[in-house]
Each structure stands twice: as C-alpha cells, then as structure tokens.
Image 1 (cartoon, helix red, strand yellow):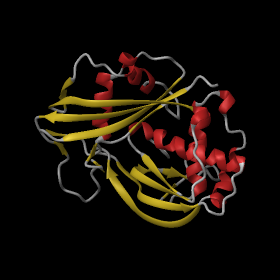
Image 2 (cartoon, one colour):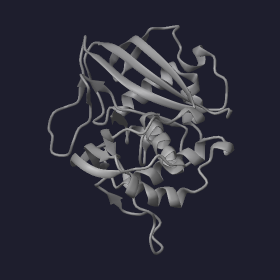
Image 3 (tube, one colour):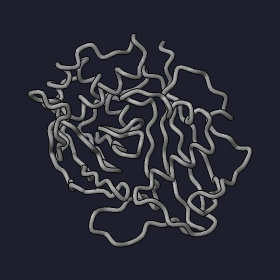
Image 4 (spheres, one colour):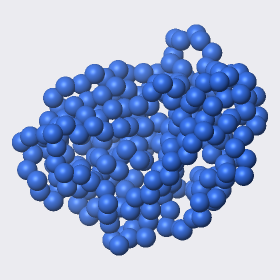
Length: 275
C-alpha cells in the first residue's frame, strides 16, 4: 500500500458583519486556510508545478462566488449568511487533527473586515489505490469553477493555447500529470500517451451545457475558462485495465480538480455516475 494520502477538508462557516471580498473568492478560502491549518500553510509553500494542494472558491446555496467580465456588482459576504469551500491536501506525512484544522478558536477575525464563525469541518482521507468506481452507463462531469485546459506545447511554443471544450484527452492528460507528480512511485501511470489517446474513445460526448467565461481574478488579470457540464456515454466502453485507470482519474478529479491553477481556485469539479 502506498504512503501518500489525499485529504479533503470541507469547510462550512457563517459570517459576522458584512465585507467586500476580491472578485475571485478562492482568495477568501485561502486566507481562512492560512489562519486555521498548519498543514495547508506548509504544503501551499511547496515550490512545484503541480502543487499538492487545491482550493475551491466560496459557495453559497450551491453557486460559486466569482465575478465575470461585464458584471458590475460588488462581491460581498454578508452577515448571517452561510458559505462553504473545499480544500485538498496531498501528503506522505501523518498529521494530527489539530495540524489539519485548528479548533482553538472557532472565530477567525478580520477576514477582509468580517469575522468568520466555523460551523463545521468534514475531513476525508483517501489513498491513491482507493480511487475508482464501477463502470457506469454514463458520467456527468460538472465544472463548478472555471476550468483552464491547456493544449500541449507545439513547435517551440512554451505554453500551448487554452481550449474551451472538455475533450476527453485534454481532461485525462491533465489528471495524469497531476497524479504522476504527486502519487507514490508504485502508483505511477506508466502508459500516459496511450491512456490519453484511448480516453477519446472511452468517453463519448452525449450531451453538454457549457459556457466560456472570463473571470475577473484581480484588478489586473482576466482569466478565461469554461463552466457548465458534459455528459459522457460509456455504454460501449469495455471494462479494461485502461478504462479502470480512467475511472480512477475521474474519481481523483473530484478531489484535486482539473486543469491549471487548481491551487488558486480553478478547475473545481464534481461527478455524477448514471447507471
């Protein structure tokens, strides 16, 4: 059994006072985590391309708090309202609970001018060899925060262009890179090119509702990605070892996200299996 753990923290909090927050609310999630989690502070500082952390934006009533280009409203957190966010940490260390989450103070003060009252924290731990599920008839992939899918570099370009449709090979390639850079060596996916190619035949687009969005990240940066959902038909896919790896990667995506900038709030996804 591998020693690496994937730990998901699901945090719910209420607010005392009103506060204007940045236009991309994952900055609030990250500030709260810096205040309440020693493990997050340590892992977020790791200097690597595929960071062992991912963070979601704030959610209220199931909707992400983000500001799109052209919208004029100011983003706020409001007195008495309840919000939530998720964080994923990947580590080979054994943490005590108080290193993951400090419960010494249930109130975190001065979060962009408001006070945060922790209402609940759920901790879930997975090993890499536990990811995957039985083959469904179809999978619906929901993009909950903007997903940034980048094509491979081409003819000397250091960075490939971004795609605004979730082609299976782009999704799976992104997940393989993250998996191989964070898992135990014994769990490495050793046939990434074949698996990426095969995913275009294993996951057949049956329906989708997608929207390209331009997010205001801060005063200087606009980020363009995709949101919505896509339904992949899997009825004709055979239960092969390659398919099992794809299903493991899709399960993994629910924890670490998909695409670039997972550590700053992009690429947050959920999956629904349809049997």
